[in-house]
Image (cartoon, rainbow, N blue to C red; front, side, top):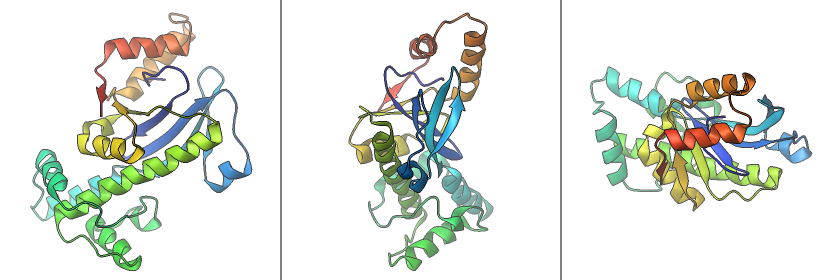
Length: 224
């Protein structure tokens, strides 16, 4: 509801979990949706949110917790700067692999996934972080392509909302991976969408699009 979009759009609610999909006026319940593990969530105003759940910044936070415990966490800004300078495309991890659900040591889980899949594991914090962020970005492309196939829409870009918009390196990696713009914001999409839902129910606004126009006019949106 808080996605500042016009027309058919793809959105990514980015936080601990990533929810990527689109908004439709009908559910998609064909064999591909089942095979690709998409869900049809009931939305406001008789809509359906065709989306897939992806493990999101949980992987980043898992690494941060381990590095904070051992006193080596440099802070988010420094970590992202180091990741940007690290060698790209060392390895790919599947964010939805079961080993990442709640490991005692997330960096060790990332390295183990790489070894078990015949890839050289990242050796430094910066390399681990880059592998995680690149893997998320490539997974977003993978899911976006399937959302387009299921919905029949060719999306011009991806709207990203939620706290994950603050990770600017991930937004740029995502734009690079999908070869289309990423529009990031608003950050507090949950609260804003809640308010818009109430305004719609109270007839203070008449349509979802009117609410989205308000969001676009009221909050900064960053294009990557």
